[in-house]
Amino acid sequence: MDVNPNNLPSKEIMPGYHGKLVHTATMSIAFWEVEEGAVVPEHSHMNEQVMQVLEGEFEFTLDGTTNVYHPGDIVVISSWQKHSGKALTPCKLMDIFSPVREEYK
Image (cartoon, rainbow, N blue to C red; front, side, top):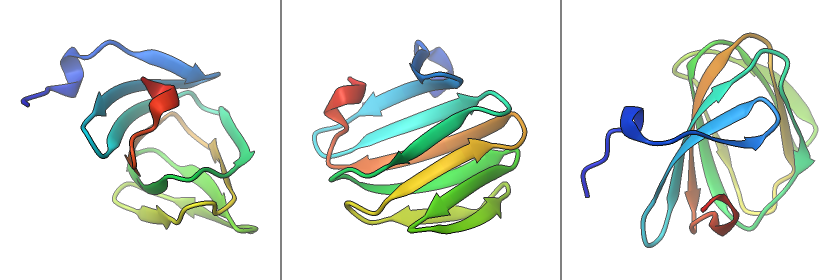
């Protein structure tokens, strides 16, 4: 499969989070454009997740510890770990989930 994320349609998965999504048999990749101030409420899920900040500043809380992440920073989120986030500036993020995030299809 060859995919250029620039050619994918964008879905607003939650307010302020516009995602271009790629799904394989075992994982999902989300390329997010996030509006400044957009919040992801605290939640957890069965999927392992790796988040990378591509552009901007993103405040992220993992198991009660909050940090601000910048371009190039990566956060690894285990299954069922509680996490939340907020875009301090307009951001571009990439999330990889395993297994597939069926609700994002």
